[in-house]
Image (tube, rainbow over all chains, first blue to last red; front, side):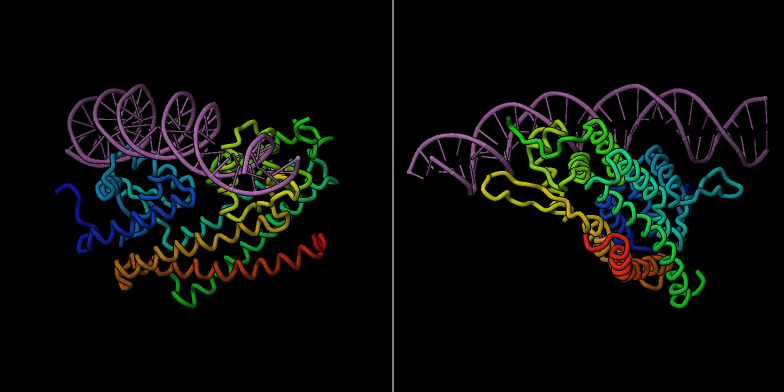
Length: 166
Length: 166
DNA sequence: CGCTACTTTCAGAAACTTGTGAAGTTAAGA
DNA sequence: TCTTAACTTCACAAGTTTCTGAAAGTAGCG
């Protein structure tokens, strides 16, 4: 037996339907297809983690495709890679309670937008109409930065009340 | 003279540099290239609006490309189309102080994610580990929905203090 | 130290996306 | 009503992305 049935006893139809449906939404929102499918598969797994081989099998793709997708996802801090002790297999894990925090940690994205905008204000002139519009947009992003941090704090409290410490 | 210089007296180099740079960030964040460029061009214009011809000229693209980009942007509520009175030209306008609110109005996106997740909870079983993970993720999105509305309220207050009524 | 079980890299085929020119449609003004 | 400026649609060529098989790299374990 090559792979133990870590995810047995579940309707593979239902799993696949969810995986493809949720992945499609992620793609719609701008994520590449393969990372989206891999991520959805991890999210739908009971253990929250799958090996490269298991991913290749459920998604019917090559190890190469899994490798590329996983690299992308770990760069985005959406999955962690962990080595299975006593094996040369790698497991990829979705940080159950933190993955969606990565969505709000678009920190890097916001920072780059802010940078581009502030260059725009400078180069077009802070006293021009366009410059003023950009300055206001910039102020909005800065405001959002701060608000998101506070919001995540409130979420953690809210979550603990409702779900307890994961 | 074919187009009047509505945006004259500005360094076209600087404008173009901002437009391409900001558009690149939008592309990075998942937006299609041409809508991103059109949008950046509008954002960088003094009047906050440009005609189809002006857009084609600054971006060096065909009317067809402008048409497609603008359709996309107006579907996303990021620009408004307005007919110039006494002319058959159309102007495309960025809602100066509201365009970025469209970014947070990812309402439709969030709703679709919530829908996909709640289907997942049902089909995989609310009492399974995977089902529980999805239910928590779903709760997070619902929480975010509400928080964003409140945040935008605070922003409007904050903005008025700082910039006055647009 | 080498074997083997994995993972990663890479070149290329296939599929998809994008922007264009040209034809078609709409509506302002004579 | 006709003319014509302006926008939109469409088929296609060019460009890009994506996934694969094959080859190369890496690390447990004897």
